[in-house]
Image 1 (tube, rainbow, N blue to C red):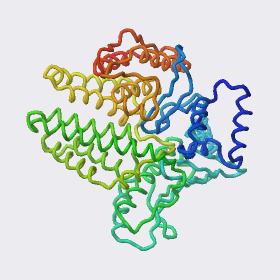
Image 2: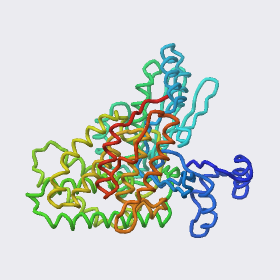
Image 3: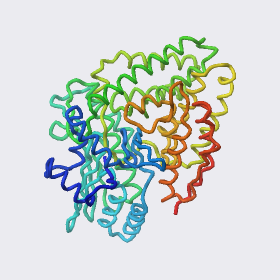
Image 4: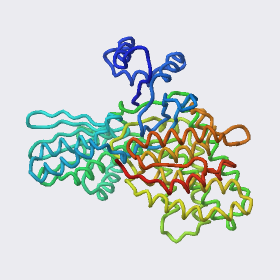
Length: 495
């Protein structure tokens, strides 16, 4: 996490230095704060939260110490996975430099510029060490580290995935099958350690190829370490020190939410005829899958199961919606029977260099939402409030999973999720309160939050405007619907 200081009685740099020296001057200050035992440090954490905020794009709850115009305390909580859509002008310049230097055959300069392009200063996800004739680099992707070396003649990278002390035919067979699907990288065995590798001659390593190759390597390595360790008991996870642990309280909140949402959905589905209400049941199940991914943001086995569920529904396999719903419900039943320890093993935070979702045009996102919005009326008019709201939740959480979106849009869509799941957000300390008792929307606080987000966006997107007075605050679904309509009008032209 990255924290931004606000008004204090000493200069920001001096203040941070004082606090750092009080704890341990030999370790990164922010990492120490993030790993504090909250039970024994509540007063310190409370004090620091008033002083520091967080960076955009974090994968866990984000505290923002800024205040809005009414002086109401703001603690902005976000969930979801890393997005690399919010490239700065500096990063775009690095990309242009990488392309130009590659054309000039100044390959080492091109590689360095490329690494600076994917380096997110707020996430601190890439380390670059350039020597006179080579570059050593590291990039973080979830629980894995990709380490590489570049020279004027070529570039190589690898990531240790898992330790295999005893040769295993089933493991090797599985890896060979995965190798067949890879375009740039491959699995290899190195001193009883399974690694993923990529290498290329400099003349073939254009910035576009580098991006695709390193993204494939990093994402596949991050995905397979947890899955292989879960599937094969003989394998041992290694090189996972870069993961960021959650507190016991955060894990418990997420675990209880997972169990509650699955049981709640099962109970609601049981009220309906599986054939007559097949479409509504599908919305409930898909919403359950996507909201778990966004709000709980699991890693490893649970993520794999959620992706399997989504693939089951959208597969072109000639199964009816009723049959698909039945198969998906069976998969959720398996998850609900997992031991708590298995679920909690996948609850941790990470830093990433590459996003799961590719950057997507705003019109594509809104076209999807308006297509799904057209399906709401029947459930609203036929007194199906649970399904009615589930469709809106599905629309937003589906967008987070499938589309890479810029922060003015993700900020506002996160606010929609916060309105729909206000109790969950408040357990992570979200303020101000947006929904009062009886699910009555607090219009004043919602307007203030939106205005704050728009003001923040205007530094980079000066044309972003949203009239908070045209939004409908009479109910949760009415508000989310009206927000989607206004989102469609956003002008995301940059400076």
